[in-house]
Image (cartoon, rainbow over all chains, first blue to last red; front, side, top):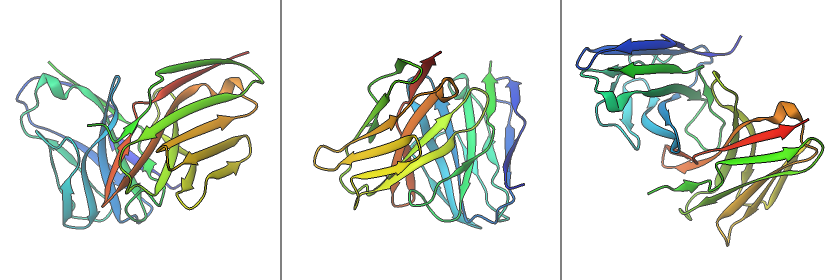
Length: 114
Length: 110
């Protein structure tokens, strides 16, 4: 089954404790992206990747890091999480860069930073 | 600066009636627009799209209209069904970046 998986689905952590949210897709897509969803703001793009070893900033990259060492994986790293990073996070992939192709989204990771 | 805007946070319609969801964009370079649907506890799923060379695209009960001069698009759902109750996002982008509106929560009452 074609899908994007994210882990963990739920995470509660404390300020400053480094964490990684994993994302994996099995569709051989070149483009991958991370978004955060906040009430009243919709989904905002954090980082995206055009292909292995090619990443770039989206609209709200501050406080986040990403890497793309393999085509299928695109982890999101919060090296020193803060409460304002409490949000719902989505990973997505598409065959090439949007918007021409639809993106496929993972189920989301709800992060709470206390 | 929001490049894609949805000014109606919520919409309630009766089953069988038409639902109209609106979206505005500011970047005249955008030439492809998509609508996504999102149920609680799930990721967004693609619904329908439209290219700027068209002013209308239809897929079953869903039709998207594009007015380039007004930088406005709308999603029509006819007839609306209770299973259509979800949050709808319009989206577009360019130069590898992608932008979503803030979403409209549609409630279709039986």
